[in-house]
Amino acid sequence: MNIGEVASRSGLPPKTIRYYEDIGLVRPQRGSNGYRAFRETDLHKLIFLGRARALGFSIEDCRVLLSLYEDESRESAQVKAIAQQHLSAIEEKITQLQAMHATLSHLVNSCHGDDRPDCPILNDLAGQAAGG
Image (tube, rainbow, N blue to C red; front, side, top):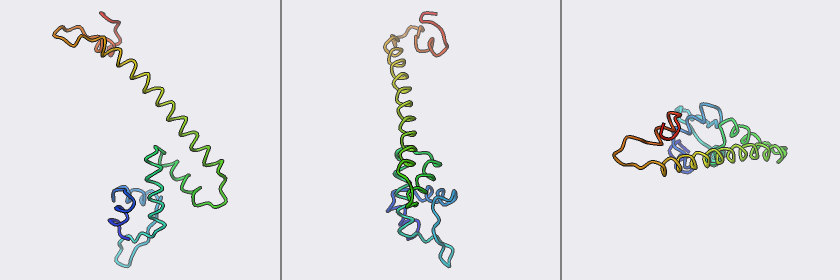
């Protein structure tokens, strides 16, 4: 398969596929003309990487997960540990986003949004108490 076909079948843009090749995540063969020649195994790796990235795994996590995927003697505990660590990071981010949401909602509700210059949102961003 050429890069256009593998891009279409994997759902990844050619630029991303070239990047994954540059950093060694996939290694397509090269034809005599120098063009990339992707195999079915390359396609499966790209689909795997696309899914892992969609779930927010870092490139380095993807590298490790791909290596575990290809290692038939792997222990699922290794995979679970990586996924659990990532899940914990997602849960922490959700907590941070919920706190940001609560703060910003309060500020938006506190602001009159009229023609007066006083603004609790700007005061908070400036580190000033309301009305200060």
